[in-house]
Image (tube, rainbow, N blue to C red; front, side, top):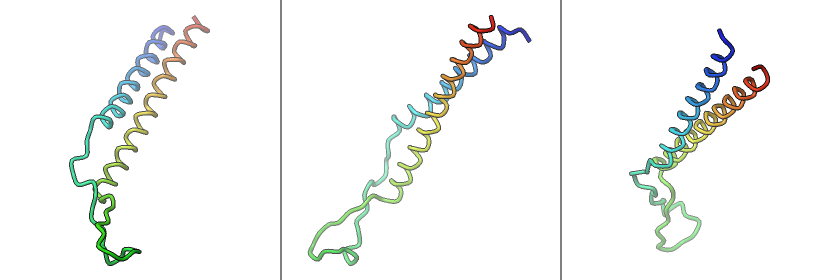
Length: 97
């Protein structure tokens, strides 16, 4: 394999990783939660007395948020990997060409 092909393959792999990472990050920014964000709390378990309407985040919303941040982290890993491969490709070409 020609060394210039190695540089091109490394650079292209980096670009593909960048595209995948950008897709993960941007899809999580655009995607919106469509369920109920809050559930009513059980007044009987409340630490205070009175007629208060206590609320907390619903399990659906908490799961959505956890999934969102996991996908964003995966996207960031792909972006860093892609940019690192592009830098590596440039350095290899500069030092060995």
